[in-house]
Amino acid sequence: MTAPRRFRSARRIPAALTALAVLALAGLFLYDLAAVRAGRPAMRWRRELAGQLERQTPSDTAVLVAGALLALAGAVLLLLALAPGVRGLLPMRAEPGVRAGIRRKAAALVLRDRAMEVSGVRSVRVRMGRGRVGIRATSHFRELDDVRADLDAVLATGIEELGLAHPPRPRVRVRR
Amino acid sequence: MLGAVNRILLGLAGLVLLAAGACLLTGSRPLGGRHAPLLTAEARRRYGHPEGWWWWVLLAALAVCVLLALWWLLAQLRRSRLPALPVDTGDGAFALLRGRTLEAAVAAEAGALDGVAGCKVALRGRRDSPALRIALELEPHAVPADALSGLADSVLTHVRTSAGLAELPAEARLEISSHHARRVT
Image (cartoon, rainbow over all chains, first blue to last red; front, top):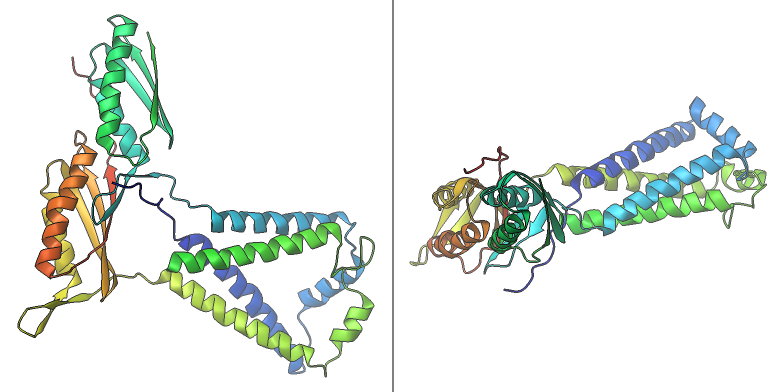
């Protein structure tokens, strides 16, 4: 019963998009350079680009904007490369031979159904975080303190029965 | 495996873009300073004339980029499902177990567990190291921990012994379809 590693996304979609962008850019330049080598004139956009590059300096606004966009895109890609992703899946306690996770929404539904079984509770909203879970209940009869005590007990067993690797701390609020 | 490759390549691309952006913003090293043009006449003279070796290096680098990007893109589209699995029959012969059959058997057995509404299974990995990926749909009032231990104890042990595998690592994702809250009165 050791805590398992977090789930890590394979990052298929960002990888596919980046690969597509590199492919398009490199392919375009390759085609154009090869055409120039074969004695044909360069495409117009490349002559314009070279002209612009000769005129613009790093103090121009357009260059600064382009630099900021490039740096931002780079930071996003780095974040995608380093962050584990799959935040919607809560890791469960390891059973022999299985690595399991439960969807955050599913865990929230389980806790909501449990909380609705407490008498005096009319409606419940559950916000499932990865380290804590917020439960807001409205009550239409019974003493609020009694309802709260019952809710605490029910939610403690409910969280235990989710079988999570890191059980979240519940925070219960009850209102009329 | 694919995840590691994707993350390394994404990280490299991110570093390159970040460095290029920082260069443009500060006008530092490869550029000539904040008030020098991005493409100087000297650079054009050095790299621009058509007989230099520089062109061939650039063309080769671009061709490598195109091939690498094409391979990387195609790797994302491939689904790694295992079509069949060799099973040791015990008399020196081997039988082939079709992946679909194994998937259907596991799905049926897991679907019969208490509190499980539905189950989808995919056999992945390679022939010498197969792995299962299981999507388990629970019923609203199921106990997730019990469903998982039922899956691990009975279903997965059973599939390991019946396919004669010493190890069959599995990854399970538990899900519950959304439904309205019902108050007990």
